[in-house]
Amino acid sequence: MNQEILFISDLHISLEKPEITRRFLDFLENRAIKSSSVYILGDLFDAWIGDDDPTPPNNKIRKQLKKLTSSGTQVFLVQGNRDFLLGNQFCKDTGVILLDDYTVINLNNTPTLLTHGDLLCTDDLPYQSFRIKSHSPEWQQSVLSKPLFLRILAARWYRIRSYFHKRKKSQDIMDVNQETVINVMLDFKCLRLIHGHTHRPHVHNFEINDQSAQRYVLAAWTKNAGQVLCWNDKGYQIEFI
Ligand SMILES: [Mn+2]
Image 1 (cartoon, rainbow, N blue to C red):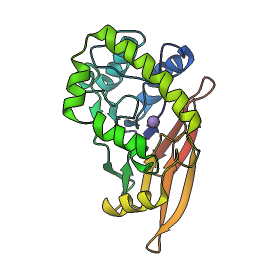
Image 2: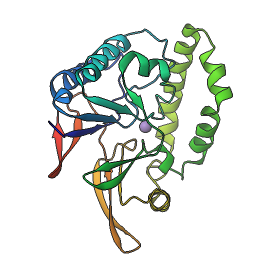
Image 3: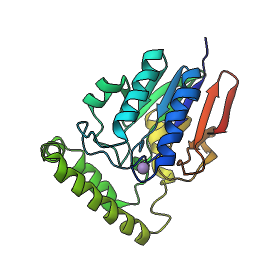
């Protein structure tokens, strides 16, 4: 039995970027199927306005994920800041298992903390307050009860707005806060953390109470390449699709 475990994040799939959709479908069909599990650590989609959205390429992706999970590969998903409305119906349609914002797994006998990464960017106060608001059941209920076409329009507007906001924000604010990273890792009793979101792929080595700790930051997928963090019983390697 194959015990390979794959981690990906920040594909930001949208209709405007067909290369990424194609690369992801190919990854599911030809690469993920050889692994025992795949963890998608958020922002699989550039926007998600409800599990009832049938606009392309959503159905193709649902179908290919379903095929993969039916074949025996487990697929786990953490919501990102773009696709935090991914919900139960999506999981039913695909066989994907939704994880909490912070989830600890046992990876080669090391407790490993998984998260999207936006919760670690605590210097970005306006975003963190929007996050609290948009994760309340009332807010989500009120958004999801709007007709689909209104949600599609709102998502377009939100993406344009977010593009301009991002350009104004300083680069430091958009990265993780190291103190937050350490506190969260202490809370969850983990010396290894894997996340995405910041689009700054790297393996950071540091110390927590004199013990060595690692933070693996996954890369965003682009038109030209998709990065996969691949673990097996010997350790990890980084692959490009
Ligand atoms: Mn993100």
